[in-house]
Image (cartoon, helix red, strand yellow):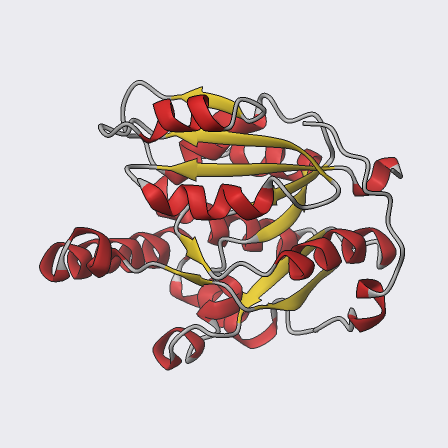
Length: 243
């Protein structure tokens, strides 16, 4: 397996229960993902224990209390062995394995600094301001860049915007690919009222962090190019993998 497509997958989670197992069921079968790190962000359910029981090949990191997505990724990154870091949310549904495999090949083939998996099945209000790209939790980033980004003051819901701002500032080569998986909205996880409250907190956090001017700039000009990956699906690959 060529070194430049060996990939570490980091999955932060908080009280995700069965949803994270839907993700792991697919991710553990994806060629070229040779390390999987799950970070328990202070959950108070038994998800971490079950991961340890049923997926012993997965590196499990436990945080003592809930600190948010940025802190969870920051901790997981300390254990990452490979330069390609696939960030993946724990609440995904309908993951297409071949799309992830193609994405890992594509970042090497096109010599990209980051590849975003665009949530093409996101609802219209997410696509309205290109949130299906800009806020997608599924992306492949270079470890060296992610370390620099998370060395800054980045908290909770700010991860994706912080990555985008860094990539835009440093003129990194960024593209997107279609991604058919969908995520589970907070209203479904924790109830309508609390769910919308959390969504509003996330939106406010993002705006205050990035600033209105930077958000407009990202909507208008960041990660606007799609890459064609059809031929990558047909390429023979080495199925040898080790976790």
